[in-house]
Length: 224
Figure 1 (cartoon, one colour):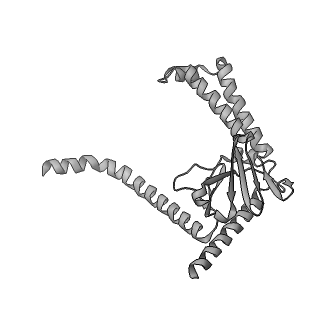
Figure 2 (spheres, helix red, strand yellow):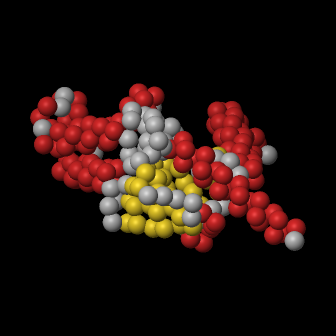
Figure 3 (spheres, helix red, strand yellow):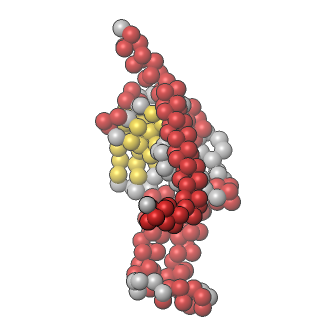
């Protein structure tokens, strides 16, 4: 009995600290789950996942928004979404910073070099990872486009990855917080569309309209 009491008393400080944290985490996840269920039931845009990334910091988001005003370019019956000038500048700037870090590490402060020496891997590994991240970001942003008309959405990512989705298969739309809208087309998979594009508001309205049309069709079919 005494051991049990001592154990409880030993755990009490941890319970007092982590108990409220666990409670608020659980409550936040529950609210997010309820919001996801509600948005999908209503056919509106909600969170893309129970746990997802945060929004871009305000100053980065302000830069990424540059060039998003106005309609998307149009070709015949298609509208074309491409990354805004702002998000391209943002990615180019971050890429330049990473490349500078690799090529001119001598410009960094002594504290930075001490931190690098304390890593469990050689500094050259970190530099290679930085170069890969920089190259991937450029390819990701500059290789993205999305074309859509009344029938299909065609998304091209990383220049060569191209997929086509039919609007009649759209089941829900989520916002991942920082970069993408996530559109689920059931068995056809998910399409990710960059949020920082000219014409994105028009695209959102169009996609929500298609989603609600699909839900109305499914409801009529179920009643019939």
